[in-house]
Each structure stands twice: as C-alpha cells, then as structure tokens.
Length: 338
Ligand code: LMR
Image 1: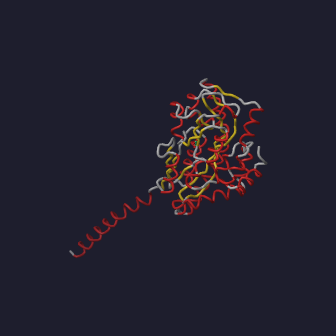
Image 2: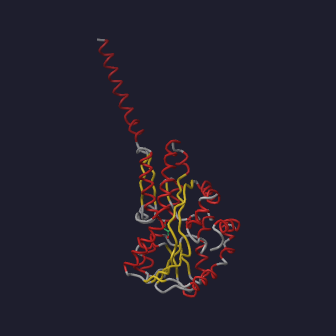
Image 3: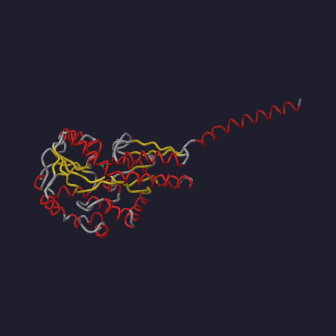
C-alpha cells in the first residue's frame, strides 16, 4: 500500500514538475525578436537591405532570431523611430545620415554638404576608413550601436517649375530632412526649407504645402513624387545614405554566439545593399522617364558651376554645426571638394 502511494506520489510529482518545466522550455525556444522599422518602401535600397538582413540573420542563427521588418513608416515616422529605438520599443533602424541631429548627433550632417561626393567610391573612403569607424562610435553615448553604413544614392531636385540656376529656387518652399546643413543649403539658394517626415512628403507636394523637395530616384519613384512634380532636375548635388543602428542594451545583452552570427548577416547584407543601390536608382529613374509624368532636366555645366559656387560657403559656415576639423578631414578623404 505504502509502495503504491509512494509510486503515485512520484508520478504526481513528476507530472507537476513537467507542468512547471513546460513553459520554461517553451520560453527557451522562443526566438529573439528584432523589430526593424524604416520609412521607405520595400522596393528600395534600404528596403531590400532590411529584407536581406532578415533572411541571413534568421538563417545564420537557425531561427533563434526572428527579424520583423516594418517598412513605409508603418510603425514610426522619422523622429519617432529614433526615440522608439532609444526606448527599446524597436531594436533596429537605418535612418539617413541627415536625421541624427535632433537627438544630438550632428556630425553625420557632414554627408549633407552639397557637391561633397564625386561618386560612391569617394564615400567609401570615409565610411570604410578610420573616420567612418570613429563616427559610428558616436552612437554609443545615445544608447545605440552603429553597425553599418548603407547607401541610397544621389539626390535630385524637384518642383513644379524648372530648377536650373540658383535664381530659380528663390522664394520656393522645399521639404527637407531634419538637418541644419540641408536647411542652410536651401537658405543659401534663397528658398524656404521646411522639415517634414518622409511619409508626409507626397501629400505636401500634392496639396502645395511645399513647392519642391530633394531626393533619390528610388525614393521619388516609390513614393510617386514624380506624379505631383512637373520637373526633376538631375543635379546629383547631394547624397542619401543610412546608418544601421541597434538599441545598445539589447545588442550588448545578446548571447555572444548570436551576436557573431548577426554581425556576419549584417556584413553580408551591407555588401548586398551597397552593391546594388546604384542600379536601384538607375532603374527607378528609367521608370520615372517611362511614366511620362514629369520632365527631367539636365543642367548645363555653367548652371552646375553656378550652383556649386553659391553653395561653397557652406563648407565654412557649417563648421560650427558639424565640426570644422571633421569637414576638413572628410573633404581630404574624398579627394577634395568635388
Ligand atoms: C528622406 O526623408 O527623404 C529619406 O531620408 C528617406 C529615407 O529613409 O531614404
């Protein structure tokens, strides 16, 4: 009798232990979730980079990490997404260089200087060299870790009137990203800059809240901006690129082997994204041409020279904002002001 009841007790205890252990085991198998929020369409250099990172991160960690990509500002708009990352509501973002100023990192606005980069090779000399590494470290003090630089491409100007020489910009309202260098750029041209979230640009152009904007071919095409702008001038005057950032507490708290695999996924998706960004933009330009919904203008050499000359004082003026030494270093690394 005693034997039976002892056995019964053991069986009962084992069952109870299994019940307690079950949620813990289930929990141990729960993947680590990385929410990757961004503001552009999936079919863009950044959108494709994010999808590639998802694919590789999930593969290399054998499903221990799950990456949820939220494109098109579905979770957060420009400024909110950085706050959300700092608070840990999302784990990963790739804001453009122009968007870190409002949280106190002004140095990345150096990439907004007009006519800084003759091509992407010149950019790589900065981002892949000691300057780029040092700049990524700036993210640490803001609760983030900077993992990589991703390209979009070169910016073009658009409006409902032809924009060729500086005089054409006078008095027009332009949507800008939240960068003081971009603000100064449009003020130098006699225009009125207005900071606005990316997700609001199409409607602002459509309703005339602003007259024009600057962006890459892929961003213009995927947001249909060309449908509400009569002219796009192929100025290639500036560059849009991104810094992939993660929440520092989250990143530092990951098991080391997982972080190693994620680093590998990031390195490969960076290479993937940057290898095809130029083509993405060429294709988007071709699609815009094909749509017939806007007129693309090519400025003459004299018009380009006039634009450069008008904007050249920014290299000195913006020293106060982004650091004179940094501007000098970057200009030197890219082979001089282009
Ligand atoms: C913009 O706001 O125009 C861009 O930074 C959007 C983006 O992320 O490419």
